[in-house]
Image (cartoon, rainbow over all chains, first blue to last red; front, side, top):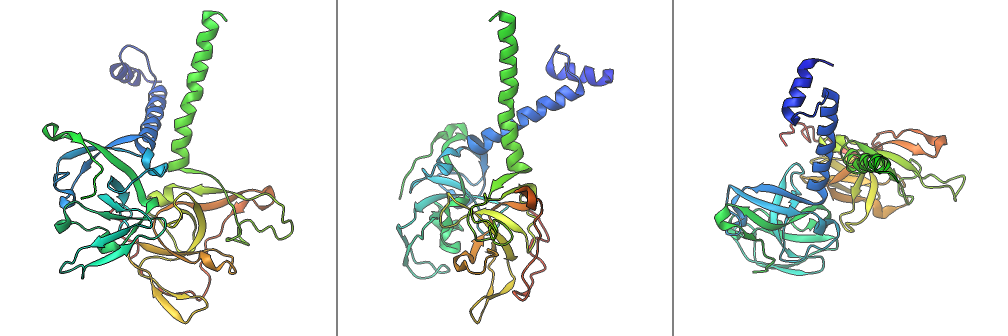
Amino acid sequence: MSTRFSRAGRWLFGSHPQSLQETATTVLKYGCLAYVVRTYGVGATFCVGPSMLPTFNSFGDIVLFEHVSAYTNRIQAGDVVIARSPQNPGNLVCKRVLGLEGDFVKVAASTYLGPARTVQVPAGHVWLQGDNALNSTDSRSYGPVPYALIEGRAFLKVWPATQASWVKRQLS
Amino acid sequence: MSAAASRVWISKLKAAAWAVPVTICFNDVIAGPFLIAGSSMQPTLNPKSEDPSASDDVVLVQKWTVRLQRYCRGDVVVLRSPTEPDIYIVKRIIGLEGDWLSVPGQLEIEKIPKGCCWVEGDNARESHDSLNNDRFGSGRVSHVLWPLSRIGRVSSSVPPGRLLAKNETAFQHSEY
């Protein structure tokens, strides 16, 4: 055990002496705890992109998500959720749920998404749509999304502080 | 109990409590055991051919390969069912996005859309297992752990004749 490491440990953790091994163990333990809280409890994320205007800005918003609703099947129509992108599993998308399984969703006509139509959401799926309908790639492009891809529900916008507010469940 | 004894007790409890998040994290990120139910992956998993009342197989499911997006054709994977989100299903990957596959029993060829892969159970009689799924695999089945008579690797192989054209760029450039 080198004295250099002991000095670093004391500098990091105050006067309580820590060997490198103890420091590594502590980092590992708290890392696992942070992972569990972030994955199964509450986490904060940057939201980027114009698809959820005006609810979220294009850049710079920090939003709190909770994951409990996702794995206890308590997501409801009108919730803002984060989900794995069905087109690119390395990405997360943030959209509003407009319909649960069995619901009928009306899709407005648009020049590149086709004529107006009514879609029934199949079993085990949800319909995701961004609040900014003019600039959002969502279920209107890639179809209903399996519920299993939903990771969490946004409940509180914390930054910018002047716009901090609860994220409301609403169907426009 | 004296004060010193209860301090020892509390410190042991704290050490045991730390095991919970560490085990959860290890199971989610590295690997963990999984109980196989059903017969859709026979004879690879849950064969039960000689003894119908034998216990279900326990397998080792690797999570890190899936987190690094390393899906290979022929892998047996665990994924959440797209139609019933509470249920996990275990199937073999036959094709990845962009591949052209022959559909068994029909004179059809299908191209797998972007973001999807084609999974099937090994048990040919269970026809409803042939699904076209989005890629939200939660793990890759690597070894059988139980029963002890069948401990060993789970082989990764695509049944011959199904894959008509491979998409060589599927997962090649993981900029994710």
